Amino acid sequence: MHGKYAPTRICDGDPNEKRTMNLLKITLRLAAFACVFAGPLWAGPAPAANPATAAAPDPVRAPFTPAADAEVLQEVPSAADPAVSAMRTLRAKFDAEPHSLDRAIELANAYIDYSRQIGDAHYAGYAEAVIAPWRKRPVPPASVLLTEATILQYRHQFAVARDLLQQTLQLEPHNGQAWLTLATLDMVQGDYPRVSKECAAVTNDAFLVTGLACLGILRSYTGHAEQGLVLLNQAQAPSAAPGYQAWVHGLLAESAERLGRWPLAESQYRAALTLLPQDNFLLVAYADFLLDRQRPREVLPLLAGHEQSDTAFLRIALAEAALDSPQTARYTWIMGARFAALRERGSEYFGREEARFALLLQHDPQGSLELALANWQVQKAPWDARVVLEAAAAAHDPNAAAGVLDFVDETHLQDPIVVPLAKRLRDQLRASAR
Amino acid sequence: MKPWALLVLVLVSAIAGAHSASDAYLTLDAVAKGAAGGDGGAGGDGGVGARSGAGGDGATHGKGTVVVAHGQWDIALRDLDFVLRVDDDGDGRITWGELRRHQAQIERYATSRLTFTGGSGDACALRVTRQQVDGHADGTYAVLFFDVLCDRRPKSLRMSYDLFFAIDPSHRGILVMHTGEDIATAVLAPENATVNLPL
Image (cartoon, rainbow over all chains, first blue to last red; front, side):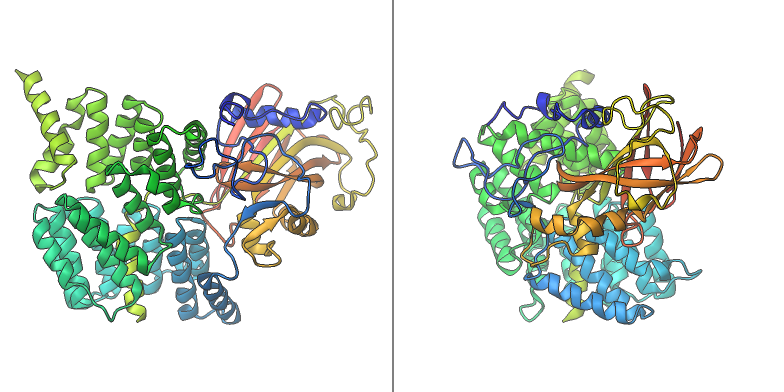
C-alpha cells in the first residue's frame, strides 16, 4: 500500500472527464490541503502491511461516485451517543424558546463540552452561533461574555478572550468561573503572579476544592511540584461529578510527570480515563506520556477511532513513526494537509503541535524552531518550552532558545525532559560565549 | 452537580492544541470569452451565448444563457449532517445511499447560500450539474459541480457566500478563482462574504 499512495499521485484525475481535470489543476495549486482522497476515510480497517499498526485513512484520488449505497463515507456523531441526544434535547428546548438566555447558555455549554471531548472545533462554532444574538447587544450579559471567552480561549485567541473575561468580571466581580477561566489563560501564557491572585479569587468565589486545584497546578508549574501534588490530592472530591474528578486526576498526572514519577502519573491518567474514556484532552496527554516512555505501540489502540481530532491524529502519526511503520508517510502527509488547511483558513493556534510535527515527522529543525518560537510568543506552558528547546537543540541554535532558558530558570520549572535539555543548551551557550 | 461540570471544562480546554474547524472549498474556473460554454462537454457548441441544451435545469429560473464559470464546491459531510441530518438511521455513519437520498436537499440548501451577480447588477444563476464525493484530510466531502450562468457576459462577477455562517460563524469558505493563467484566492468569512471576481 505504501508508495502507491505517495503524495506524487494524490490527484490523478479521471482521464474521461476533461472538466474534472481542469478543475483538478486548480485544486492541485492548493498544494496539499484541498487534494482529494478516494473512498471512505475513516470507515473500516484499511489493510495494513503491519498488523500492529492502526487502520490508516484510505488513499487519494479525484472526486468519485461510490460504487454501492452501503458504502460508508463518513463517521458522524451517533444519535446513540448520550452526549449527542442530550445536545439534541437542549437544541429542541432552545428552538422552542429562542429568546431564552438560559436555554442558549445551556446549549452553548453542551456544544463546547462536546467540542472539547471529541477534539472537534465545529461544535465550538455552533456554540458561538447560539449566543450570537446576545453578543450583538451593546452590553452583553455576563454569561454570554464568559461563554464567548471560553470559545475563544479554546481557539487560543487569548487576547480577545482576556478582554471578554475582564468585561465579565466588571459586570460580576464574584464570578468564580470567570476567575478560573482567567487563571487558566494566564497559566497557559506563563503569567504566574497573576495566576496566584486569580486562584485566590477562585477559592473565594467558587468552590474551595477548585481553588486548591488551581493553586496546586500553579505550584507544580513553579518549582513546587511536590506541594502541587499535595494540594491536588486535597482538591479531590469523590462526590463531585465525574468531569471534575477526571480533571483533578489529569492535573495530578501532569504534576507527577513534572517529578518524573511515572507510575503515579500513569495510574492518575488511567483513573481519569476510567471516568471520561472518550475525553480528547486526556487521551492525548496520556498518549504523550506513552510516547515519552517509548511505548508507541500502546498509543494506537488508545487513540483508535479518534482520528478526527488533529491532536490525536498527530500522536498516532508519531507512534507510527516510532514503530517505523510503513504507514508513517501517509500519516505524515495527511497531518501536513490538515495543518495546511488550518493555516489557509487563517487559524494560528496550532504552533506547538505543528512544531512537533515539523521536527519529528518532517525532520525540519529550522522550520520547527520558527514555529516553536512564534508559539512561544503566545503560550508558555511546559510543553511550549519543550518544543522550542528540542527544536533549538536539533537546529544547533542554542541562542534562539535564550528567552525560553531564562523563563525556565526564573520559574524554576521542574521537568525531567525539559530541565536536562535546558542545561545542555545553556552549556552550549556558555561555551560559545567564551 | 452542574457547576462542577462547567468549572472543569475550562482549565482543560485551553491546553488542547489544534482542532479542525469547518471549511468548505470553492473552486471557480472562469470560462474564457469566446470559449465554448462547457469546455469539453459538447464540443463546438458555438461560443458565447450558445449554451448546450442540457435539459432539466430547473434551478436557473429562466435566468442566464451564458456559462461564465464552472465551479466545484466541496462541503464537509459532517457539516451537512449537522444541519440536514444526513445520517438517516442515526448509526453514526453516513453511507452513499443516505447521501444520495439527500442530494436534492443538499443542492437546495447550498445553492440558496451562494449568489452571483453580474457587474451591471444582473442576477446570474447557479446550476448544479452533478454531485460526487471526495476526501480531504479531515474527512469526506460532498462535491457539487455547477455552472454559473448570466444573461450577458459581465466583466466581473460579484459573489456572495453565506454557507453555514448562521450556524457556525467560524466556518470559512476557501475560494480559488482560476481566470486564464491567473489564480486568485480568498478566505470567505462572515465579515468577508462578498467578493468581486474578474472574468
